[in-house]
Amino acid sequence: MINNKKVLVTGGAGFIGSNLVDRLIDLGNSVVVLDSFLTGKLENIEHHFSNSNFTLVEGDIRNIEDCKEAVKGCEIVFHQAALGSVPRSIENPARTTEINVMGTLNMLIASKDEGVKRFVYAASSSTYGDHPGLPKEEDKIGKPLSPYAVSKYVNELHAKNFSELYGIETIGLRYFNVFGRRQDPEGAYAAVIPKFVKQLINGSQITINGDGETSRDFTYIENVIHANLRAATTTNPGAINEVYNVAFGERNTLNDLFKFLKEFLVEFKEEVKNAEANYGPQRQGDVRHSLASIEKAKRLLNYDPEYSLEQGLKEAVKWYWESLQENY
Image 1 (tube, rainbow, N blue to C red):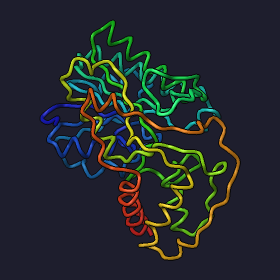
Image 2 (image 1 turned 45 degrees about the vertical axis):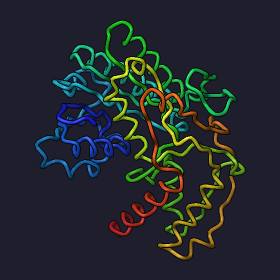
Image 3 (image 1 turned 30 degrees about the vertical axis):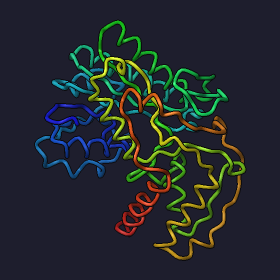
């Protein structure tokens, strides 16, 4: 495992980034966080403020000088900063492109100039677009279906280009529907799991997009942390300058998800067992089915995900319940 290193986590106040920061600190590393707090939250990282191994750089990846300041002295970069959400990218493609593409390019330039050894970045399963094949294999992609998907694919091209031209070691991790503690249940672009959990707890009506048979490879946050650590520390030459699926390798529908959430929430609120869902229109830009092949990551990164959807949901539901009680 990675320890006694100086590392940078961009977007370190966000959902995935802050969980990664916790683990890196626990492992004895010196961690720098670069975050603009556009979507990240101070409360996700404030418990580290008294730790001498933690540094916060409040800045924007769209500003190359902020990137250069944050990366000083760092050996490894975990680039998690991005503007997520397919619907948000459809509404404002310019903003998504500016942050995700130019921001990532700035980080690659700053990392190259600083002599960073390893650049691990968050890619996305949205890159597979309209390719019909299941499970999704890294070398078979289709046409991206949203500006967000385009931005994430362009990041992969830039990373590959930088590795070939400048020798920086890059590894991209195509996340599949990550969920877990600290994922924001609020707002129009909230991810489905925290949004459903909060609605069920509050007794609000849930609306499922489409017929509920849209399927995803839901991936618990601990699996994602595990993949990032593997990517940062692999010494396998064949594993470098590649992209990998990060998932559990199982497919569940939105109807399955709703059923599991009711089952696990009943322990905390009995009325949930009577909850029923409404069904609305299919969301524009969404892929109908998604399932990852994780064979490449297993083979080259020794990636071994521990948490299935059900195991992860049990942990996440407990965290959300306790968190919501603290806030009331």
